[in-house]
Image (cartoon, rainbow, N blue to C red; front, side):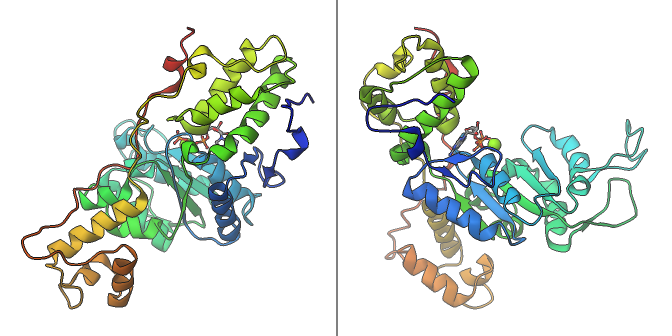
Length: 359
Ligand SMILES: Nc1ncnc2c1ncn2[C@@H]1O[C@H](COP(=O)(O)OP(=O)(O)OP(=O)(O)O)[C@@H](O)[C@H]1O
Ligand SMILES: [Mg+2]
């Protein structure tokens, strides 16, 4: 295998974290990625539901597969469903199946993904897109492990571990009643947040080396040098499409590199934009805004049957410590709260290829 080398780096130094466990290794050495991978290791052997959070292209699916591969279900199926890619009217049948004649066009019985995943893992990608009316049925299968096919009378029991992923602000959606709070708390048992690439520039060098090796091998190119200024330009880029965008850029760069030196598409050689895009709201900000709103609605009464703790499904003491952690306290009279309605966590950003249109 060819290796891409800059003067101070050799292929041996590329960390291939968890490579022995996953089909596609998760590359990167930053503290924040290591922390996420540590959580993968902790949660994988349990059967707990996991919620993977992160912007587009950060590696949510990669993480979901890593959890499955490191679990005792690894020899059983990993079934994926992208809730955003299936029309709402078909999603119920996709998830739970239907009996013959259940609705017009149901000419044969269909097995849903929950049944297909029996004994294994179901990856519910873009879980924020599940329509409200389907959410109780999903909650039931998560809680009771049982459901009926559409048009069926028999209750089916399955043994499925669910990993969900989203780039949406689910808590904000709970606040605006587009996502059920009980389902949110059921999915939020063990959240793993993958930080955007722009917050971990330390990972750029190893990712670049890895992708250069992959594409050079596939395209039969020899790339021996990744110039320092090239790496600097890559570290400065804001990467709205995260690792997927970097992967595409490196593929393009490998095609352009005929001299043995990695050559970037022209747009990346230009200086970084003067005002980088606004940071997305953090999960913590959204959590804080949501709790503040419930406190506001409860008139800042914490305990008692109408208090904020009951509304949030939390113990009074838990809410107290959450408020302390989030520095939340009752505003002075007339001051109002400082919180806006939660904004979305996902920042769509510029998309990749249109930026690289050959210059
Ligand atoms: N740490 C990483 N190491 C190696 N490859 C990575 C890493 N993170 C992401 N990738 C690659 O980037 C691409 C996008 O990853 P993935 O599909 O898991 O992202 P995602 O968060 O699910 O994106 P989306 O929200 O758009 O579905 C894939 O080709 C994946 O292999
Ligand atoms: Mg994905």
